[in-house]
Amino acid sequence: MISSKKELLDKIRLGESSYLELKEVRFSNGRIAGPHRDAVADTLAAFANAHGGTFVLGVQDDPREIVGIPLNRLDQTANFVRDICSDSIDPPIENVVLDRVALPNSKGEEVPIIKIEVPPSLFIHRSPGGFLHRVGDSKRTMSTEYLARMFAQRSQTRLIRFDEQAIHEATLDDLSPELWRGFRTSRTGDDREDTLSKLGMACLDGNGAFRPTVAGVLMAAKDPRQWIPNAFVQAVSYRGTEIEIRPPSSHYQLDAADICGPLQVQIRDACVFVAKNMKVRAFKDQGRFDLPQYDLTAVFEALVNAVAHRDYSIYGSKIRLRMFEDRIEIYSPGSIPNSLGVERLPHIQSTRNELITSLLAKCPVTDDFPNLVTDRRTLMDRRGEGVPVILDRSLRLSGREPEYRQIGDAELVLTIYAAEPEHSPLTQSA
Image (cartoon, one colour):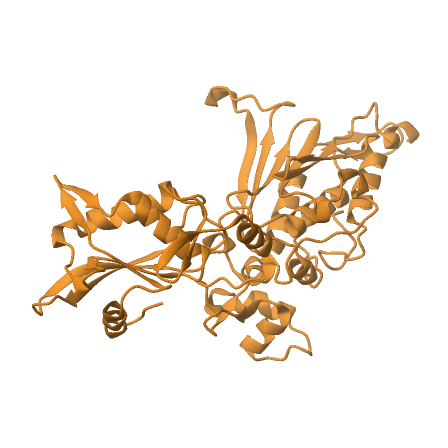
């Protein structure tokens, strides 16, 4: 990224490159007549899909002349760019930095321009021109093979997995010391860069700077959504057995929360949400006997699996936790890793996010978890016993085995059925 006025002037004099695009802004009848919004969208997406770059508005490319933008048009131009980032690019580019800079024109007069810094993206963006990337001083359409390789690199099948990638717009200061220090061991030492590097929470980016990784942000940032907007659990408790949107006075939602924070906090708070909203029936015929709707250990394992194994490279998709009177549904973004079918889940261990699971295996189960959640000391059990625990404990409580189903490549859904007195093996044997 270009950090000083002198560096920017030097780059402009040298002309467009893999990291620099120059465009004059033209106005007609009070509106921006050029460059065309589709061309701007294509350039921004191409930078984001490659190694990032700088887009300067207010400079002619040929000849390389600084013409500026009228001072009373700067806000209009900035809004023009922001609208393109959000409306013309899918998924939207949310982390561009717009800077207003005064540069000398050919007469030596200081005129304003807008400098747009586009960092490399964790996601692959489609613009009106398709899937583009930057090659030299031009935009090129990605070949089918190149695009497939890009998608794979940003998912789980490459040597560098998605959770191991650096987040270029984040810094090590964005990671909370009170969070990442809890993962230290005698092998990691005390130096921040060395410790975070050994834990996989930070790595060198393409410019040689230490940056937090996706896993580092998810585990040690106070709010990972700043960089990964979909990294949260949307929890809703509904009245009845179906979603029926009625007038607000009917209160079809009994409770709702966006559960945010580092992943270990999301797991705890999601367990708290279920414990708070599920019903517990009490029987006194033969001494005190409580029948909860759900086995909290099974719920805990299901939430750990959802948070650990979901596909964080799918933009805009969050974990959805839905509670009904007769069941819980947990929607986890992405397909089952390694193309496994749902019928093989209880028998085969498969991990999408190796780094995240290794860090969760170091996270203690804290005292603020609901009672009866687990007797395990850490959040993750890497022996692959989570799914069998979910199936077995839920079946013993409700008499119905939970069901997994895959919705295309978009989501894996787990349904856990509520225990009913007339069907529960526990009440029948009591």
